[in-house]
Image (cartoon, rainbow, N blue to C red; front, side, top):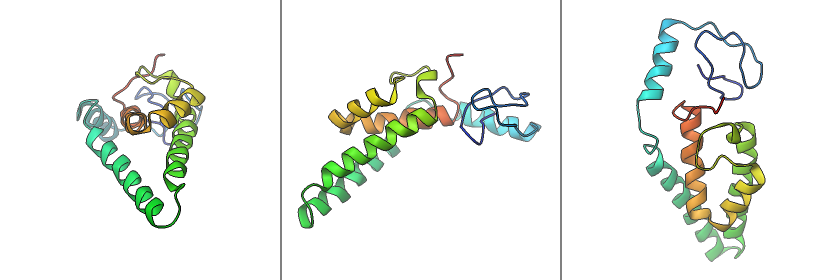
Length: 139
């Protein structure tokens, strides 16, 4: 069962979240079945096309804005999305999961800034896999 507060995967019979300590709702057969379906529904790569679409859309909008209004718009988009990824990674405790980018927020920020076209969609894919329970915690 995923915690509604922090997104940490927990045992189906757990009463408290192992990540943040919040109370978890009583698990019903339907809830457990839905969680199992989410975990088994796709491969870890199933979210890549959506992540790439989001990334290309951000680049397109920032590029259009940079061409017509302000030249620095592309850098603002890259820095803003990289900062969001860094802050979000600390909220979901990315370093606690078995993934290729299980690093601290500062490392993720620097990586996303310098390799944004690769790093940002990669982060979005890993984030989706963590929140859907495909990637398991190291604990």
